[in-house]
Image (cartoon, rainbow, N blue to C red; front, side, top):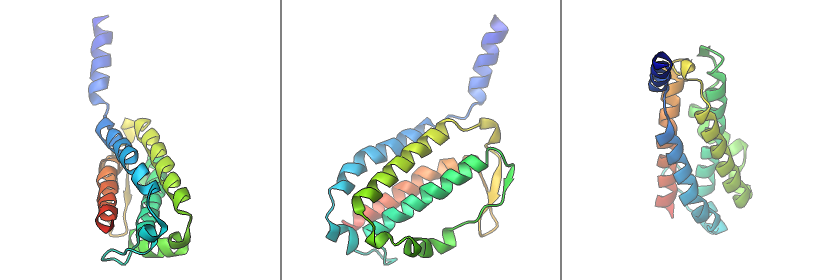
Length: 167
């Protein structure tokens, strides 16, 4: 019985816990959804940051981030080394091709919210034995699944802060 208890405690010790990240994502969604839903068309479409991106385009980029990171997080759990296209160098092209500037704002906010709720689910279900699996970004740097998960919240918060600065 003592061996079983020790094994369970040891396994729990080895299991990576990303609760602080998933809780952080949930807090961002909870605090930002009402603000974003309350924005006028003018506020979302006209104000531009130093990269000439509107609030709509910034949120579109966050949708792209969720989409791409979701794919990587899932694929890295069954591929030790992943070859997956990076979109970082093409962010503006992605934004333009999807025409976020003319998309329905309320639909965008909901897509962003629900995609991130799914990201929370994916992170909570991640196979901890796969956290060192990696992919190469466009600069040739290896990014592990663990690094990707740990960096997701700060990327989300950075772009939400950009939206706040525009408002």
